[in-house]
Length: 114
Length: 115
Image 1 (cartoon, rainbow over the protein chains, first blue to last red):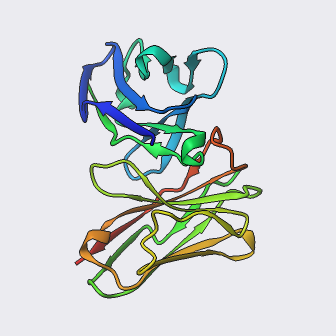
Image 2: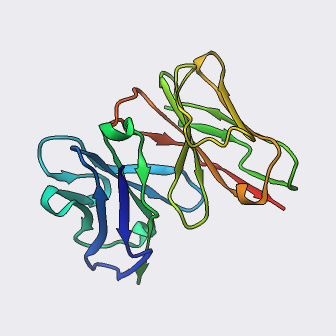
Image 3: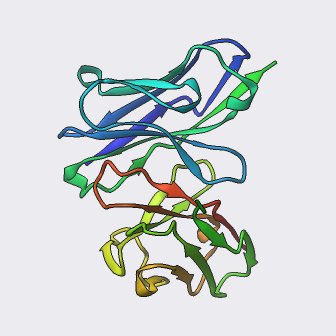
Protein backbone atom coordinates (compact mmCIF):
# COMPACT_ATOMS: atom_id res chain seq x y z
CA UNK A 1 0.00 0.00 0.00
CA UNK A 2 1.14 3.50 -0.62
CA UNK A 3 2.24 5.77 2.17
CA UNK A 4 3.88 9.16 2.56
CA UNK A 5 6.25 10.30 5.28
CA UNK A 6 7.08 13.95 5.74
CA UNK A 7 10.11 14.43 7.92
CA UNK A 8 9.58 17.26 10.38
CA UNK A 9 6.15 18.55 11.33
CA UNK A 10 7.63 22.05 11.67
CA UNK A 11 10.46 23.73 9.76
CA UNK A 12 11.73 27.22 10.49
CA UNK A 13 13.96 29.23 8.13
CA UNK A 14 15.11 32.81 7.88
CA UNK A 15 13.90 35.01 5.07
CA UNK A 16 16.23 34.56 2.11
CA UNK A 17 17.44 31.14 3.26
CA UNK A 18 17.03 27.82 1.45
CA UNK A 19 13.77 25.98 2.01
CA UNK A 20 13.97 22.17 2.12
CA UNK A 21 10.91 20.10 2.97
CA UNK A 22 11.43 16.35 2.96
CA UNK A 23 9.07 13.72 1.63
CA UNK A 24 9.55 9.97 1.29
CA UNK A 25 6.97 7.70 -0.24
CA UNK A 26 6.24 4.03 -0.42
CA UNK A 27 4.93 2.59 -3.67
CA UNK A 28 5.49 -0.69 -5.45
CA UNK A 29 4.74 0.77 -8.88
CA UNK A 30 5.61 4.05 -10.58
CA UNK A 31 3.89 6.76 -8.57
CA UNK A 32 2.41 10.12 -9.26
CA UNK A 33 3.74 12.61 -6.70
CA UNK A 34 2.38 15.96 -5.60
CA UNK A 35 3.12 18.89 -3.36
CA UNK A 36 0.18 21.00 -2.16
CA UNK A 37 0.28 24.16 -0.04
CA UNK A 38 -2.38 25.24 2.44
CA UNK A 39 -2.57 28.82 3.66
CA UNK A 40 -4.55 29.57 6.84
CA UNK A 41 -8.30 29.13 6.43
CA UNK A 42 -7.92 28.13 2.80
CA UNK A 43 -8.08 24.91 0.85
CA UNK A 44 -5.08 23.13 -0.58
CA UNK A 45 -3.47 24.47 -3.76
CA UNK A 46 -1.20 22.50 -6.08
CA UNK A 47 2.43 23.62 -6.07
CA UNK A 48 3.78 21.01 -8.47
CA UNK A 49 3.46 17.39 -9.52
CA UNK A 50 5.49 14.60 -11.04
CA UNK A 51 3.78 12.25 -13.47
CA UNK A 52 6.33 10.99 -15.98
CA UNK A 53 9.42 12.26 -17.78
CA UNK A 54 11.82 14.80 -16.32
CA UNK A 55 12.51 14.06 -12.68
CA UNK A 56 13.12 17.71 -11.72
CA UNK A 57 9.77 19.41 -11.57
CA UNK A 58 9.30 23.17 -11.33
CA UNK A 59 6.20 24.64 -9.75
CA UNK A 60 4.67 27.93 -8.81
CA UNK A 61 6.25 30.58 -6.57
CA UNK A 62 9.80 29.40 -7.29
CA UNK A 63 9.42 25.92 -5.78
CA UNK A 64 10.82 22.77 -7.33
CA UNK A 65 11.08 19.10 -6.42
CA UNK A 66 13.13 16.18 -7.65
CA UNK A 67 11.81 12.64 -7.99
CA UNK A 68 14.52 10.21 -6.88
CA UNK A 69 13.34 6.65 -7.41
CA UNK A 70 16.39 5.06 -5.78
CA UNK A 71 15.77 7.05 -2.60
CA UNK A 72 11.94 6.97 -2.85
CA UNK A 73 12.03 10.70 -2.20
CA UNK A 74 10.37 13.81 -3.56
CA UNK A 75 11.84 16.68 -1.54
CA UNK A 76 10.58 20.23 -2.07
CA UNK A 77 13.04 23.12 -2.33
CA UNK A 78 13.12 26.85 -2.88
CA UNK A 79 16.43 28.76 -3.06
CA UNK A 80 15.28 31.82 -1.12
CA UNK A 81 12.40 31.89 1.37
CA UNK A 82 9.93 34.73 1.43
CA UNK A 83 7.63 35.69 4.28
CA UNK A 84 4.66 34.79 2.10
CA UNK A 85 5.86 31.17 1.94
CA UNK A 86 4.77 30.59 5.53
CA UNK A 87 2.09 27.89 5.24
CA UNK A 88 1.53 24.16 5.59
CA UNK A 89 2.86 21.90 2.89
CA UNK A 90 1.55 18.45 2.04
CA UNK A 91 3.26 15.77 0.00
CA UNK A 92 0.95 13.23 -1.68
CA UNK A 93 1.18 10.06 -3.76
CA UNK A 94 -1.15 8.08 -5.95
CA UNK A 95 -0.58 4.92 -7.94
CA UNK A 96 -2.36 2.10 -9.69
CA UNK A 97 -2.22 -0.31 -6.74
CA UNK A 98 -4.34 2.07 -4.70
CA UNK A 99 -6.80 2.69 -7.47
CA UNK A 100 -5.12 6.07 -7.96
CA UNK A 101 -6.49 7.26 -4.63
CA UNK A 102 -4.41 10.21 -3.38
CA UNK A 103 -2.66 9.59 -0.07
CA UNK A 104 -1.46 12.68 1.78
CA UNK A 105 1.34 13.03 4.27
CA UNK A 106 0.76 14.60 7.67
CA UNK A 107 2.09 17.94 6.51
CA UNK A 108 5.00 20.24 7.37
CA UNK A 109 4.36 23.72 8.68
CA UNK A 110 6.92 26.21 7.37
CA UNK A 111 7.77 29.25 9.47
CA UNK A 112 9.75 32.12 7.91
CA UNK A 113 11.61 34.46 10.24
CA UNK A 114 12.33 38.05 9.31
CA UNK B 1 -13.14 31.00 -13.19
CA UNK B 2 -15.01 30.33 -9.97
CA UNK B 3 -13.36 27.91 -7.56
CA UNK B 4 -14.84 25.13 -5.46
CA UNK B 5 -17.50 26.52 -3.14
CA UNK B 6 -18.37 25.04 0.23
CA UNK B 7 -20.88 25.93 2.92
CA UNK B 8 -21.14 26.47 5.75
CA UNK B 9 -17.60 27.53 6.65
CA UNK B 10 -18.04 26.73 10.33
CA UNK B 11 -20.43 24.53 12.27
CA UNK B 12 -20.73 23.71 15.95
CA UNK B 13 -23.06 20.91 17.04
CA UNK B 14 -23.52 18.61 19.98
CA UNK B 15 -22.79 14.91 19.77
CA UNK B 16 -25.60 12.79 18.41
CA UNK B 17 -26.92 15.69 16.33
CA UNK B 18 -26.88 15.62 12.55
CA UNK B 19 -25.10 17.97 10.17
CA UNK B 20 -24.83 18.46 6.42
CA UNK B 21 -22.19 20.08 4.26
CA UNK B 22 -22.61 21.33 0.71
CA UNK B 23 -20.12 21.54 -2.15
CA UNK B 24 -20.31 23.08 -5.61
CA UNK B 25 -17.35 21.98 -7.76
CA UNK B 26 -15.70 23.84 -10.60
CA UNK B 27 -17.93 23.85 -13.67
CA UNK B 28 -17.12 20.97 -16.00
CA UNK B 29 -15.24 18.90 -13.44
CA UNK B 30 -16.44 15.31 -13.55
CA UNK B 31 -14.77 14.14 -10.37
CA UNK B 32 -15.64 15.29 -6.87
CA UNK B 33 -13.91 14.31 -3.63
CA UNK B 34 -14.73 14.68 0.04
CA UNK B 35 -11.82 14.63 2.48
CA UNK B 36 -11.66 14.69 6.28
CA UNK B 37 -8.73 16.61 7.74
CA UNK B 38 -8.22 16.09 11.45
CA UNK B 39 -6.02 18.63 13.24
CA UNK B 40 -2.36 17.80 12.71
CA UNK B 41 -3.01 15.27 9.94
CA UNK B 42 -3.20 15.31 6.18
CA UNK B 43 -6.51 15.03 4.34
CA UNK B 44 -8.06 11.57 4.23
CA UNK B 45 -10.33 10.62 1.35
CA UNK B 46 -13.87 9.80 2.44
CA UNK B 47 -15.60 9.42 -0.91
CA UNK B 48 -14.92 10.04 -4.59
CA UNK B 49 -17.58 10.57 -7.27
CA UNK B 50 -17.25 10.50 -11.01
CA UNK B 51 -20.27 12.38 -12.33
CA UNK B 52 -23.01 11.02 -10.06
CA UNK B 53 -21.48 7.57 -9.50
CA UNK B 54 -19.32 6.52 -6.56
CA UNK B 55 -15.74 5.55 -7.46
CA UNK B 56 -14.39 4.95 -3.96
CA UNK B 57 -16.08 5.09 -0.57
CA UNK B 58 -13.91 2.55 1.20
CA UNK B 59 -12.99 4.93 4.02
CA UNK B 60 -16.46 6.40 4.55
CA UNK B 61 -17.97 5.33 7.91
CA UNK B 62 -21.22 4.27 6.35
CA UNK B 63 -23.02 3.72 9.64
CA UNK B 64 -23.07 7.49 10.18
CA UNK B 65 -21.80 9.23 7.06
CA UNK B 66 -23.62 9.52 3.75
CA UNK B 67 -22.96 11.49 0.59
CA UNK B 68 -24.69 12.11 -2.68
CA UNK B 69 -23.98 14.02 -5.84
CA UNK B 70 -27.20 15.09 -7.45
CA UNK B 71 -27.17 15.30 -11.25
CA UNK B 72 -23.39 14.99 -11.24
CA UNK B 73 -22.81 18.55 -10.03
CA UNK B 74 -23.39 19.66 -6.42
CA UNK B 75 -22.76 17.29 -3.56
CA UNK B 76 -23.80 16.99 0.07
CA UNK B 77 -22.07 15.11 2.87
CA UNK B 78 -24.12 14.24 5.94
CA UNK B 79 -23.18 12.96 9.37
CA UNK B 80 -25.89 11.42 11.52
CA UNK B 81 -25.38 11.04 14.43
CA UNK B 82 -22.16 12.98 15.01
CA UNK B 83 -19.47 11.82 17.42
CA UNK B 84 -16.79 13.83 19.18
CA UNK B 85 -14.12 12.31 16.92
CA UNK B 86 -15.85 13.77 13.85
CA UNK B 87 -14.47 17.19 14.76
CA UNK B 88 -12.36 18.08 11.74
CA UNK B 89 -12.22 20.18 8.59
CA UNK B 90 -14.20 18.67 5.73
CA UNK B 91 -12.67 19.52 2.39
CA UNK B 92 -14.32 19.21 -0.97
CA UNK B 93 -12.21 19.02 -4.11
CA UNK B 94 -12.86 18.54 -7.80
CA UNK B 95 -10.85 17.56 -10.86
CA UNK B 96 -11.51 17.41 -14.57
CA UNK B 97 -10.86 13.67 -14.88
CA UNK B 98 -10.31 10.65 -12.69
CA UNK B 99 -6.73 9.64 -13.47
CA UNK B 100 -4.19 9.52 -10.67
CA UNK B 101 -2.24 12.40 -12.18
CA UNK B 102 -5.16 14.82 -12.04
CA UNK B 103 -4.76 18.11 -10.22
CA UNK B 104 -7.37 18.47 -7.52
CA UNK B 105 -8.84 21.88 -6.78
CA UNK B 106 -9.89 22.34 -3.18
CA UNK B 107 -12.56 24.44 -1.56
CA UNK B 108 -11.90 26.38 1.67
CA UNK B 109 -13.41 23.62 3.82
CA UNK B 110 -16.03 23.39 6.53
CA UNK B 111 -14.68 23.37 10.07
CA UNK B 112 -16.85 21.14 12.28
CA UNK B 113 -16.69 21.12 16.06
CA UNK B 114 -18.67 18.44 17.89
CA UNK B 115 -19.24 19.14 21.59
